[in-house]
Amino acid sequence: MEEVQKPAIFAVRSTIGQEKNTADMVVARTRNFNLPIKAVLAPPGIRGYIFVEGTGKTSVERARVGIKYAKGVASGEVPLSEIDHFLVPTPIVRGLEAGDIVELTSGPFRGERARVIRIDEPKEEITIELFEATVPIPVTVRGDSVKVIEKKEKKEEGSK
Amino acid sequence: MTERACRKCNCITKGSVCPVCGGASLSDDWSGYLVVLDPENSEIAKRLKITKPGKYALKVR
Image (cartoon, rainbow over all chains, first blue to last red; front, side, top):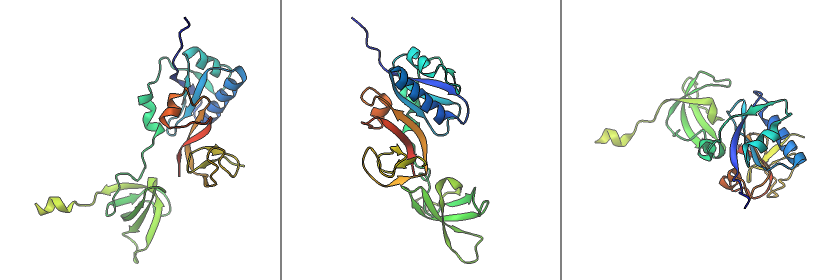
């Protein structure tokens, strides 16, 4: 009886900055040669690697052969648990709270300190009030352009 | 035309309407790239509850 191979995830080395193009080329080759590739993943923040889900390393190797940007298949399978955090990214604003003191890391107010007033989790935006400003004006910035300097003091701890 | 991602189902399209859910709320600000070819047999597609083949973004703002 023929053994049915379960799909596994393999890491394919690619040229840095060409992850999306490599993924597109692997998909094009898969369609042309009718290879058993199930999915191709280029996660954000991972440079030089893409993940290819297919039945067996041979099929993944066949899908990447001839592609200029695909350098080779890493030995060994990648368990789904290892790439799980890429699939469901946590919001950047998680952990921030209204009242926290932050420092801006980009934009025109870079380097300035501010207090968080409001957090918009779906849009990943935060509204802040700059300390240096003469008139307190609320400014809305992206969640990834701040770093936390001081967390809001917990009142319950002080009362006991 | 640039590729945009659907805010509802994360599907990437060049058109003005999402080919998967039919929604018109598309965003230019997306990251992560996933191409699903065989959603029925893909563990990644199952994890993300993707049922239709196509291109998807992992994060859409």
